[in-house]
Image (tube, rainbow, N blue to C red; front, side):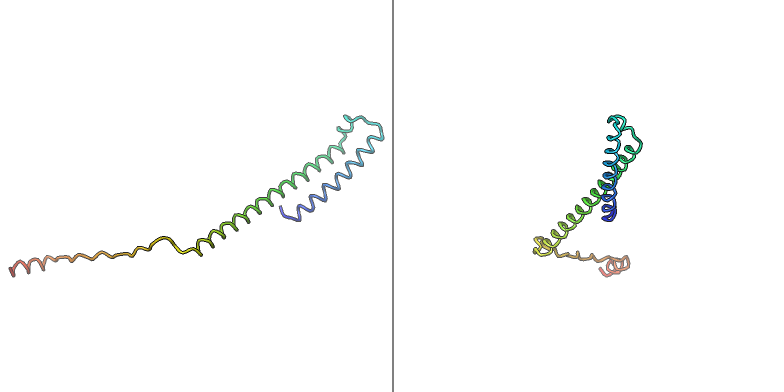
Length: 117
């Protein structure tokens, strides 16, 4: 979820909380006991909406945390790359010695050298 979703979820949660408080006050004025108030369908619906908004906000917070962790890791990785680039290399470069090729003796050359001897 993005930042816009966070704003909307927060606004929705505040609206529903206001509705819930007014609904609870109205039911208390009617003289209902807390058990009956808890069973009221409107109260249950409003509390469910508050829970949903809270879940959305938690999801946004988790996404933001994940994104910030990624940014921090990326910065650390770039810093280590820069540090290794600026340091002179400690390793000695080995020169690749090409082994000399052995001359192949051809059968004709062997036969000709044998005849000369």
